[in-house]
Image (cartoon, rainbow, N blue to C red):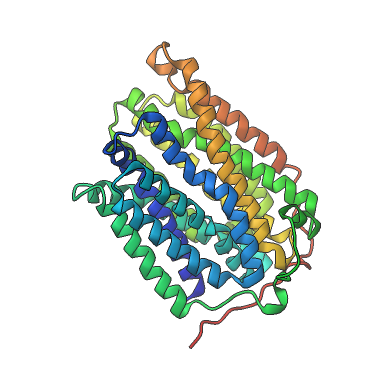
Length: 404
């Protein structure tokens, strides 16, 4: 079995679990008399834990290898879902979300594994596998959660726990280590996460991290308010909005899973990242002005295409800016920046939405969506200064063969 497929499966399971939460968790929390504020904290604490633990897991993977970190973190994901299924109190739900957020920080380790086994010119294409897993997870996760919640509120979480447990066994039995002993960080040498900037092109890497933060912040405003927007403007219920998210997810999967490699060879990472960011800003600005369902689908398709261009290319570029033995920490910083954006975006979007209340319905969400587009233009401006290294001498790929 291909190591890339196992990494894809790992990220897919993480994202299915995240997607399952979307339609089920609020109702599950209300079962324990949770207030809206508590539900908000229950949702946000996942990203909060990722901000802290994504770089820690990335740094740990640079020291002990990618494989053990992936195995242990995925076991933590299984445990988190089991606790959520067993929960008989709101406190246990918080414990489960904390466990899941900590273990969900393995995305950077998965990206570092891909960077280890990919050549620089193929890295963005390989990173597209992560994007495809994200898209599939967000496509199927909410659907699985909605369907299985008819059995019980616990059923989706038990399903996700079983899926994670199976993946742990596959990783343990099949996945080879990608980081050789000589490329690992010295286990006794104390380092700070900021030290990553001393091991590569620090200015370019810092610019890419900032670009990624503004990208995720702007995009998170849209994802947070989209269901409310479609309800007000088109009268959609959760099921119909779920179909729209499925439509977006399918386009992202097709682009990031199959086309991104060819596009990178033809146009290069920097051009695709800039094009994607500009298209993302334009599409988000047009979203509140979509008057009909066909127009909404066109705008959503543009959002999906743009997002599919941006994420793998930014991660691929970031991995080329930092030395091999610091890949886990570097990509951990990237994911922490993204997690921070997923905290800031919803808070900012909710506050800006207050300015549209009391106005005619066609103004609903216009202010936050336009603000999100402006934030994405900031990301686009930053991306204009990004330059790909002429020759990647600090990061070299070592092919990995599966154990017989």
